[in-house]
Each structure stands twice: as C-alpha cells, then as structure tokens.
Length: 114
Image 1: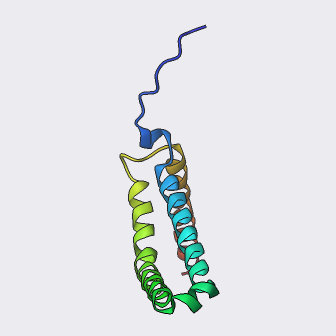
Image 2: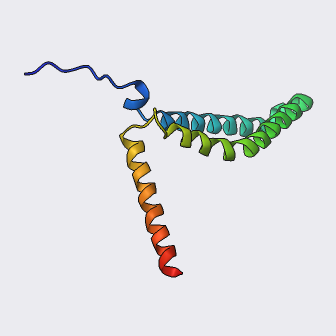
C-alpha cells in the first residue's frame, strides 16, 4: 500500500470552524439561560438574600438585552466572513454555489414576471 500523505490543508480548511463556533455559542447561550432560570426560581435565595438575587437577576436581564441587540447583527456577518476565502472548505463552497444558483433562478423569475 502507498504511504498516506499528510493533509496539507489548514485547520479551517479541514473543519467547518464557523459551525464549531456556532455550536459553542449555542452551548454558552443555553448555559446562560439555565443559570438565569436557576437564579430566578431559587426561592431559598430570594428569601435569604433578596438583594443579591435581585442584583444577579438584573445583571442577567442586562446581559440578555445586550445579546438581543448585538447577536442578530454580528452572527450573520461572522458566518458570512467565515465562508469567504481563505476559509472556504467543501461545505462552504457547496453552500456558496447553492446561493448563487438560487439567486440566479430568482432573477430569472423576476425577469419573466416583468
């Protein structure tokens, strides 16, 4: 058998790093939500330390407000940038050609409608 050649592609070309980062973000958001729910529903803490529990709840609400404001605009930009060279892998290239094909067919439908 022929010796196996080492893969010379870079890490982000071998793996879909944008998906890895997306999954890490999902896990972090889930954990933040879980800790928030535990804080809000901890009746013992509300009776023993209402000021501290209220402060933590307020901080979580502030964090959620920031996430709601920033995530919808930054995540698509991040994913778009990670799909461009030099980060193009087979999955990104297939998605890129799929978008081009979809846009081409949409433009043809728009031309036919006019």
